[in-house]
Length: 149
Image (cartoon, rainbow, N blue to C red):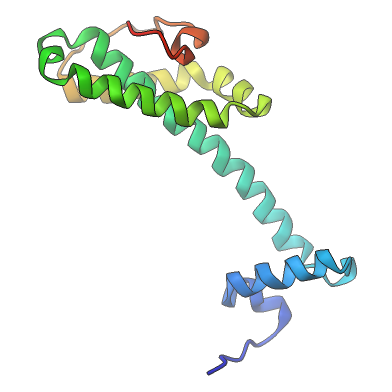
């Protein structure tokens, strides 16, 4: 059963996948006059923003686990290996994203803010309230697959 779609202009809101298919076909056939430019622009901007959010998220998780590993010494015996695994995983995900110089620069420029978020999360998890105010590691240390604090 085919569900009718009111108009091409509403396709974006009614059936996103159909809109993508139509857009791909229009681009393939170079039918630029028919392209839904407004929504296409919105989607392109959203894609870039999503990559930046993912970068910050992986960086925050990596920093949180580095903090736990470095400062929650009473729990390290029990959780240290698990934290190491998480550090490896978050570094790998982040490394893939940071192949983009734009995302690397974004991570570098947001390091202080993201560190504060990670610090807060680590403090809540560990009940440690004397974690360093400023990030104690350089971006190169944070990303270095052989570095553990």
